[in-house]
Image (cartoon, rainbow, N blue to C red; front, side):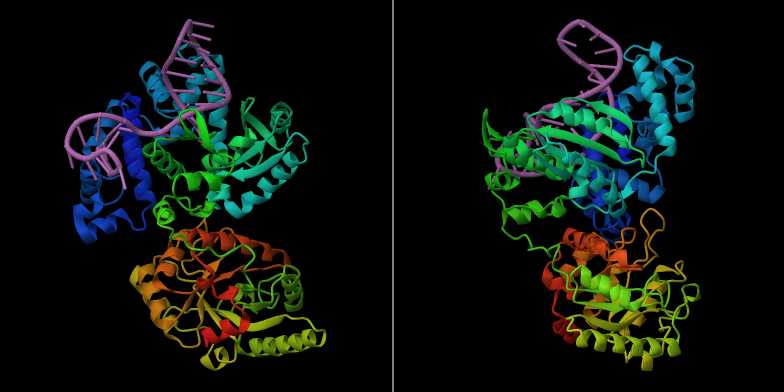
Length: 566
DNA sequence: GCCGTTTTCGGCCCGACTGTTTTCAGTCG
């Protein structure tokens, strides 16, 4: 609602307020707590303490929480009764155009817009032309098919393909992916490529005609933008070498992070843009990101942290964490095999893990309650233990420094009990507990259910603690603050499941765990030999949650990790 | 409408591209 108020104000040509509302909307979206909870717990004043929210917006939020609506919003909407979210989704249409279309053609929604465009009415309006009408029609087609944001891990495959295509051009001196992809955000809207070149024209010409491209939004000397068949939008920007760092920082974002950097630059008497940091007309930094951060009086900030959640203040105070690195994992603590719903044998999975440089894996097949996966009962898991012992012996004889750990992804039952008896769980190296059923219990019941499992001394890790599937299934209702508190008390490990559509824990909970001193594991949840590659997405998520090596148990040597779990 | 190393008034990030215009407004990131 706040965002729409901003758009309505923008329509009317009001200065500055639109940005204030937009900022408040973004701030509330990214705030650690639901605004409703903030209000219920600590009232109006606490709402005002959310950055970007002042007296006036706080009152509107209060009204919204209390009555479910806002008079101010309704007034604005009455003046221009259009379906804003539907119309702004059309590429190239913003508040000003939407207002003109409403006033002159009474266009209220996508359907009206399509009708008017097809009838050739839009081209006759002043400020619009044939081309605008054509673009609107194209835009409508894309809105109809568009799937919104892309899951990071899945988009990466396409990003890497395009990256390798562009890198093969001799005109490309250097290329890097910027934007939310570089920040490793769990979902990305588009991919931004940054290129250094003295001769950009052939690059741009090649880029807009690549086989994956189905639409060209812009085709310029320094900037081009396209849509790929998959729906992913890709931008290419070419910059001179001396501006590379500034451009990389600029295009990496986040937007709010950049705005903050610019305001700091202004206070110091500088100007910051994508070409560099300037004092007057003199460029004082810009070749690398490091020199820009330094000139602004702060430590270098890793891309994963650039979300305006305190990283700038920490960088100014020299208090940024030393993040876990992409090569730091020594083992994988959730691996499925063909004993349940995995595709490959224990040995095949172990060999694949060795091939990517891991030193151990934990086998965690499902348990009997999850019948559709062929989950293990007591008898079969005892068999599996024997099999793993044999394989470890075999590896030892072959002088392979690799260990297969015995484990389970054991279902947590409705009452918080475990799907396998304690006398079995005791025999395993590490026990993971998971929720796979009854996602719709009340928050209280679900929280108690998991807490009870955490009280079981045989349980070591809670797998994918919130059960969400990005873009597909919301997390089940669970009080994560309470879960983190209990984890601290019971020395429970919480998992960061690295599978691209899970990333569960998500970044903000990871950060809460870091702050609370709760340890985490990063696991692939591999169901096939190719899945170990997803571990990097889990590491990315951990970095976004400010995690260091000390926070993640499977970067530690095997003995230290097992000792801690014991 | 928000905010404060320019602190309770007076600023607010900045540039590229497109289309329609003939110098610029709107949109986007």
